[in-house]
Length: 258
Image (cartoon, rainbow, N blue to C red):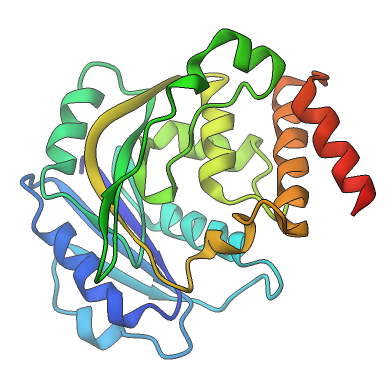
């Protein structure tokens, strides 16, 4: 088995069919789909006849922290998976039918890699490309502000089985309870493995009112600055040292004020 696509979903039944369909339409044969659902009304019977798909319904473990529930779903799916490479997918997003084909060529050259592609944002009335922030690679920007790369979301991330296994064992993913898996996994993996930013748009990220990240994306909200502080602390944890820069100072001052 080459790939395991792990879909985490919670009360997304109106989007899940489209999500799964894009996985079944892959221009590639050696893969499995694992759905881990924490919805109040599970959809197990709808998918039991799909050969490539395994469906698991589990209870939420972290009532107050949705990002940790997402982490727990992915970990659960990982333990049930058999693929050499893991593709993460939110239950409201979609894959290009060429995604696995493209990834197989990249992983074929070196297996211990983590890849993120650039998503296209979409809704009923919208379709637009996410902009690549070239300044993130600027040496001065990295030194003075932040050194971590642009992160495009959970559904854009694929990696070797070894990387995800090591992340769950050593990366302490259930600490820092405002940080989603995309932030933690990218920061963890880039310290030890090859991080490849693939400019091909192989993921479609759905925009709607219940997006998990919306809670933390408002620059003037308390939750934004709490999460940013945790992101800096997690980066310090991985580096095993504190790096005082302008971003750290501003974030600390704002958190004190708040």
